[in-house]
Image 1 (tube, rainbow, N blue to C red):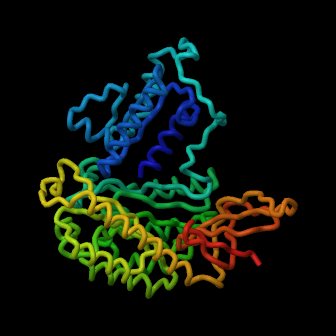
Image 2 (image 1 turned 45 degrees about the horizontal axis):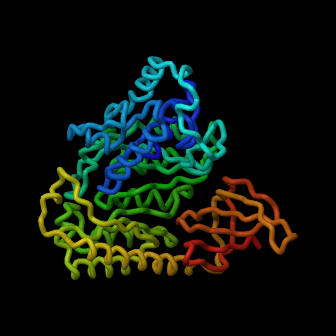
Image 3 (image 1 turned 120 degrees about the vertical axis):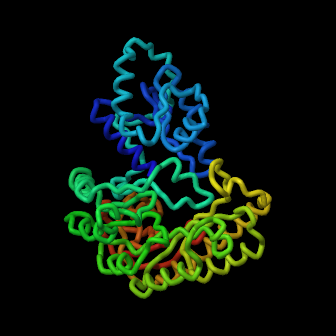
Length: 432
């Protein structure tokens, strides 16, 4: 979500005549687009704000995003920011920046007032978020599910969808003007897209599938409470939809799920996975797992471990419970010691590596299609010049293979899986 928002802000400012430079380079304006999903994210956002002022002492420092939203509500004074903009006013940010810049004569500032930037950089800097291969496209905003641990409904507001025509227009621009072969649909509650228009996410997928030049459609995080047979069937029928689904679980114990206010249980989650697998045999699932939620016992945690193993996720995004002031869970007193939460997190991280290995091994000796992201020249044995091609399969396996001639990024390429490298989380392939 933030990556999409940041990219859009950069695009709009470039259209106004600004040029984007790497962080730390001399700049008239630095924008910190913050996150507050955990207390760690909030702390990092505030630290980045302080750093932005330190490396940009004479320019404008702008603070926006979810941490900015929370701190505005709390009435916190942020001395390092010249401008603080809430999420609901973010659409006004570009005009506000332009007005502020016009009020100050930056040409009068001597160059020595800006800290030197020691690394070379291109005049037109790419933010690195978009690799010219895949682009994020935010189609939905807001959430009203109010899980007891989550601050997002308070920082992002009520659910609302981007109109179908606007989504299609943006998608065509990304494909035809920017040349992206893959689009990642994102939203706070992506599965709620279109409900206020009498539409569903599968309707959007069908229309996006018609765009010539778009080779892949990838979905970001899905909420199990909103996945139904229609969405599963559509994902199976449309060849451009990637066979990788990130479905947020949070816990594999029903008692903890109830305490989290998730409104789904393990059996319901299991049925969704079974339906996907019946329709898409090579499907891959990733998920979020929270450890250390207040009241989580060793028994609760062991239930989560068993359920994760049963489902056979390919990767786990593991994070420790983070109390967010203003949420129901923040009022709970039966906290889990941090050392216990750390140990549980580490166990799941190790389990995630093992689950990835088992999934990847299924495809050894088979031919799979990757979307080429990079093709780098490499020398072997000091003489032969070859190329190393890297890309992702539709079910989110990273593959590296050798080629004797350059292959253009964005190409759909068939490769044979030869072996896996578990420590790097990659597969070695062969074009032969």
